[in-house]
Image (cartoon, rainbow, N blue to C red):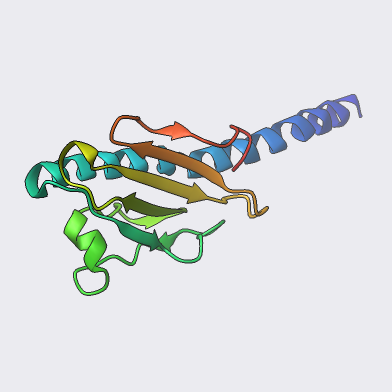
Length: 142
């Protein structure tokens, strides 16, 4: 009986921690993809002299289930011009907002959003020309 009680106590501690670990691992794609967007925008600017904007994709935010990122050769000219598409399905939603300026005044902001726990609170990562990827929301937001 004591053994069953100990196993029950351990399970009550381990199961919530395991769920948090799963959500953190799903959210981990955001900083990697936002950093990829930043790198690609910097390369785009070297070739074309300005940055490009890309619409929020996919729409709506995927949530608990991964979805295919819909930018392909035939669907989204903005993402294709940038030359960035995530590898495989995504849990997050991505966008790039760029100004019209050329040269030193050119700027962009790359954002990634996710709601892997489905509670309506978005985890947000952002980056720009001068700023490497950083998390805007708290670490407990999934």
